Amino acid sequence: MEEFSADIAMGRIGGLRGGEPGGTRVLALHGWLDNAASFLPLAGHLPGIELVVPDLPGHGHSVHIGPGAEYTSGVAVNAVLDLADALGWDEFCLLGHSMGAGIASLLAASSPRRVRRLVAIEALGGLSETVDRTAARWQEAIAAARALPGKRLRVFTDIATPIRARMQANQLSEANARLLVERGIRAVDGGYVWSSDQRLTLPTPQRLDEAQIAALVADIHCPTRVIFAEPAQPYFPEPLRSQRARLLPAGELIVMAGTHHLHMEDPAGVARAIGDFFTAPVA
Image (cartoon, rainbow, N blue to C red):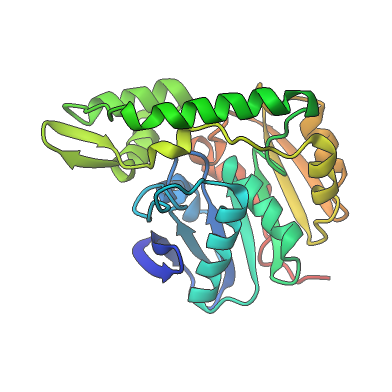
């Protein structure tokens, strides 16, 4: 995998690119507060594809959105489509993990003519909110946004501290935590700070309710393979995640033992679950 960058309307998108030129085109989208390094362990296990892994806006080496703007699913979907346009990819497959799988799901539903296949790891359709929580969610989101300008970034005196933090927060091995941290920090006087945009930590004021997400998932018509780790994450529990997978017109569900970052911790197992899904002829 090699570094690449592309200029889109929002600004410069950084990332990693590799695989087999001329192979099946696959865009891989990482999770919340991760970066393109999330797919480094898996990349070598997926033959026959040309793999492009961007740092999503606000993450890694990519641009932060402008002052006063908000990170939304729509912003992310359009950024990915702008990147595909910059690459000259009219059609492509999507591989997503966690937040990236949610974004990939929404992209597949909203731009069906461009997405040939979808592999969604540890998410499908994004997080929902109940209607009765609408006002409370707006109150929490606006209060957090107004308080953010007064917060200072924590400065780490060495790289070992953020590595330990990622290991503990995400059940990651030291090697995999290091991959994410080395791409997710920047040097400042006195040490290092996270390079991701602080606004990514803000709650979004508006989320779709479960019925709306179900309608979107049910309109993903490309062949889709969903891979979930067992045990389930508390914010995406059973039976919700399996119920969503059953909504897919051309979907299949694989559940395997692992942690949330199973594509990093068990890349060979995830690669077996993916198999030749990307490279097999479309019926």
